[in-house]
Amino acid sequence: MKKYTLLVFLILFLLQKGYAQTTLAQLTEQEIKTMICHQWKLSYLEGKGKHINVPESVLKLYLGFKPDGSLYEIQGKKNYSGTWTYKHATYTIITDDQDGKENWDIVSITDKLLVVKTKFKGILVNCGLLMAD
Image (cartoon, rainbow, N blue to C red; front, side, top):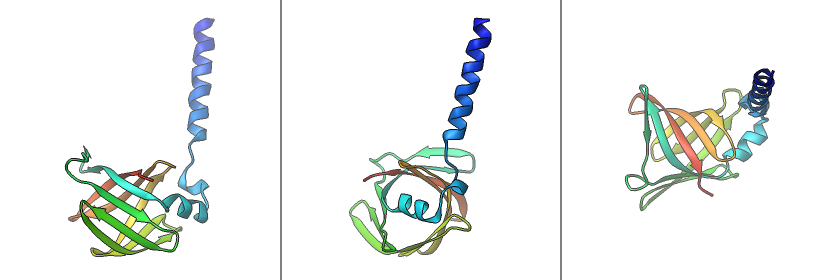
């Protein structure tokens, strides 16, 4: 009997955790824009079935999205600026900076992690960005 009670509580706990996670479809356009507007630090890349953590000693890359639509990027000692917009129908951040126009499809977003899908040198990759504010 104890095994069944423990199993039931475990299942209920896991179900509650699953429902507690917010999906993009549950967020309004304004909520997502507000969540985007922070400074983010590149943490990892995923592509072609590989996951690569980006050590700070190798690359420090920060992206900052401001509410006024401006964007800044810090790569080591170099600073760049640009603009960004958000298209809610496709959950896409569109940036326009020194690299030209790029689409960043939001895979997931929380208060601490932004995961976006984009092309890097022709390869589709997921970029994990940790909030740096």
